[in-house]
Length: 211
Ligand code: GLU
Image (tube, rainbow, N blue to C red):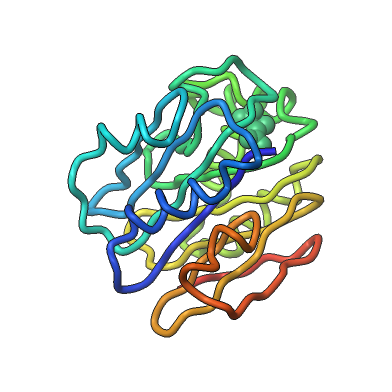
């Protein structure tokens, strides 16, 4: 199982993401990671427990970020394979639960086209596909990338300099938590009960924008 979380609002994102990830620990995981929107996207990952990663995190005042607990399906349990994953220019960061069935064909094609992969995961094709199709319109490039993907997913994606989280699901759970001046996203309601009691459950094929 494992889990994903995201936050965009006015509070510091890091403690909220850590807290929400801990509330998803019951789902099991082997590694974890965060990406925070700063001038650049800052990515922090670790193998093992969220507490271990937490102990090594620098101070960060960012009000927007995404988090992940991984249950490895493609690629060994390692820091490199932990999420978030990014594109070549590190401007797009993605966390993902699920399996991209046609990842090898996509990876081969993207590699031929000049993209450089650093992990063994199926997930890493997502940021590279969005990078490939990005034409200044993030939502349409995500939609275009999803057309190429076969498999199951719940994902959260962010783009450097953009104040939105793009989220979507297919055969993997995802719920939006609504706040006032802030919004949350997670694999499951318990992650967010501390912050809101207003939820929107996404359905298969849904794509949503959190701002
Ligand atoms: N298939 C992805 C991986 O192996 C995501 C696994 C998960 O759902 O945590 O990294």
